[in-house]
Length: 179
Length: 95
Image (cartoon, rainbow over all chains, first blue to last red; front, side):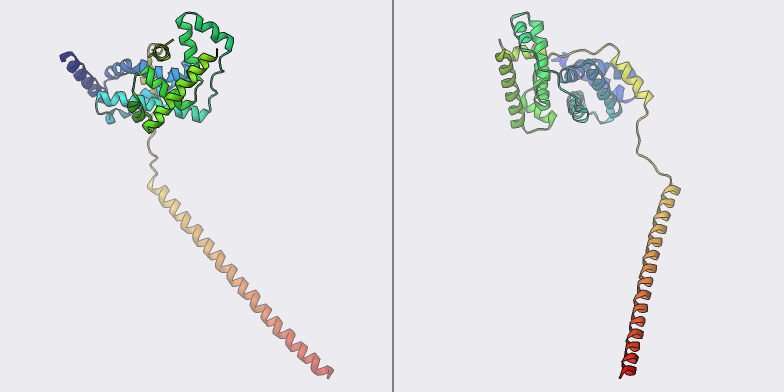
């Protein structure tokens, strides 16, 4: 209990210092959340360059918006929401081509093989989903968020989020089952 | 295979290349924040003056056009009455 309270106080203190222009405190915040932000963007695009670009843009926006961040929990929500929006905006603006669908033979061999290959192929299958499904699946399984939390981040009705999740899982099962 | 379990493993968080914070801070200091454009008062005054001048010039052109139209109509009316008078005279001579 005390450990949780201390960690929360430390987060508040870091945020306060970052607001006052302390670069070390800001770097601490980036360090605490970079794998979440970069992970969301990387899994969304399946591209390291895009992941880095989105992560830099999100943290740059954070740097300029520190005064509007109320608490560490608000910071976490804000980062998830801004990252999600930037991913969707980027794909709409640039009409980025989705990754090439997997070859049947390749996937079949993967399922029978070791897990790292299955993970890689699953990531590719996720990246091949429509953008809204891709986003809710990534938030659900990377961040372990439930539909109620996801709907607040992506600003969609909860039934739409549930529908996207259901469709995405059905599509993934079908693609895996087809092979 | 438990798909949800596999998805959690496949989509776990991922770290970027080291030094992200430094790269962000470098960008923050390289690219100044875009601030709302503040126009100089003289520029606002000049724009207003230009708008008023153009509007006045347009009104003047419209008034000139209207005057010219009235003059043409008057000329046509005069010409018409002259033609009618001439016809009357011609009819009188021919009787």
